[in-house]
Image (tube, rainbow, N blue to C red; front, side, top):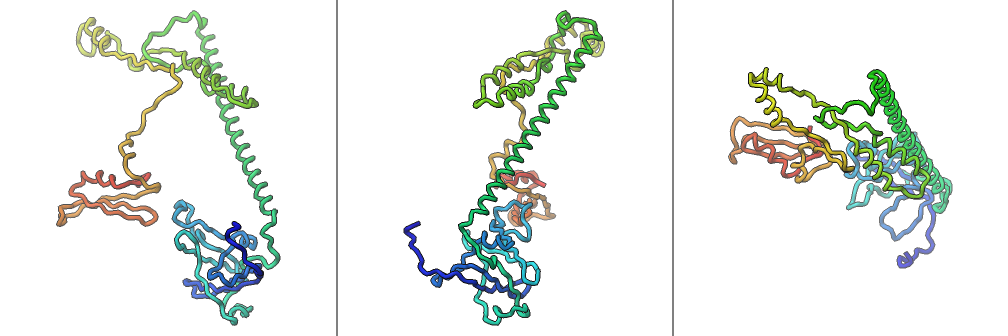
Amino acid sequence: MEGLGTVPDVKIITAAIAYDDPEAWHTYILFYHNALYIPAMNRHLLNPNQMSANDVIVNETPLVPLPYDLRNKHSHSIVATTELHEELHIPLQLEGVTSFLKTRMPSRAEVEDTDNWTCTHVHMTPTSGWDPHDTTMANHEASLRAAMNNEDSYARRRIVQAVTTEIENKQRITREVEATQRKAKGTPTMCRPPKPMHRATKPQSTPQAMQISRIRRQQENSPCIDIDSYAEELERTNCSVGTDKRKGHIGPEELANRWGIGLETARKTIDKTTQLAARNFTEPMGGRRLKPIHYQLKYKRLRCEMYVDVYIAKCKSLRGNKVATVYCTPFHWIRFDPTPERRDVGSTQSRGSGSSFL
């Protein structure tokens, strides 16, 4: 910063610039109080924080990086209030990556028109003194950030507490139902005969979420997390597997009656065709089937909603195309892909696609 040099004898003035609204065909005189006057500068540099101190809204983010649902009239604009208590909307433009607005030097008559007959006066910065080194705003910003973080932390704790309570209630209800069933049958749990081995069912031990929740409460005040305890609980919980009769099971007698075959033949048929699909829960890492969209991942994608429609012509074009696929987005991006037949519509996605089609 020292290599940039210094500018001596910089005056603090009240500057006035004229803005001509191209839509309303009206002129606004923008007054900037406590501005630095540097004659060698050809362009004005605006301070968003200084304008915000006078209740002027400065939206600096351009429209392109903004999400679609956040774009509105006041996006990438300056919104102020005139002396007539009317709203002034100044849309910003881009020169490269720099936002700007077109202004000009006002005439003396426009500056002295305090009755707002030919133009309207707007005060963009506070008329009182403004200190850029004041720490009041920085202290308020830090206090608001701390309050927001506390609110988020409190909300997360409430969610975890609600989920834990729900798991505990379900586990208590399950234990009560099992105890009632054991009393109704009158048979001790350890003396009950084993069920036939046909299909693996859910383990009867404590659920994983309950075990992990219990460990988390025990290690809440610990400076580090004991990963071995998590792994041990998962292994102990997952190793218990029960069995039950498979749904839709058909015995040899019923099969022989349906097919009109002998009982021995039906028994051999069931023995050769029955698959005992036992699920293995001994590994803590599980798997799941994915939706069949993996073939689309090799194409380029736009992070937006995309509308698609297919048009079929009555005659072929000079290039032999009869079908056209039209893609468009809410921000007016349009692509037209002609194909010879309707079955070739899927090949048009190879040039890119959206995150969801409508």
